[in-house]
Image (tube, rainbow, N blue to C red):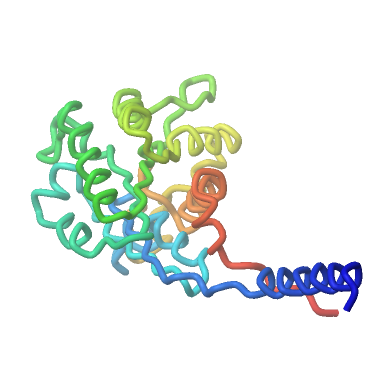
Length: 258
């Protein structure tokens, strides 16, 4: 075979091999996304329904290569989550390629609660979660505490975590940790809806509307099913930006058949 023909044959063969490799894709390794936090994220008991933690609908966004393991618990702070032994099983089971979503603050910041955590300790515990995750080659993501529903007389959203949200950002910046600013994103959503419509996102019920709350409920911290889904969608949108590798595992829409 003469040289020009041989060269053309080799070039053609390389193209074919390249296309074959491009078409062949190794299956993705199965991973777990651990979620640690408080009642705004947690899985609710039936007696709390329709109160819904945003971690509940969040679990439905991913394909079969992902397990969402939501360990968030009502009333917990960074301090009590560790002290009660809730953190250690997560630390023991984290493995390479897993993710750790960390969202605390609601119970850390209230000085009248036993779960109160000082500003310095709050940062220390957040960093502890991050450091352990990294030691297991897992990927930590810090999440600022989701906002409570509060408006001023002019209908402007009031920031409800003015001290502890900046602390999360500080830990993230100083230690180069992925960050989702859910506090700001949820404030933006509330502002878009306004004082009246935003009630639909929270566990607001009139007397007699639901047997779990016979006297009604006006809760500006915990979410309705709709609210939990909207907050989960905010988090998902941020995942697409800060964690594109994880975003690749979001369920793909099925093609529409005619």
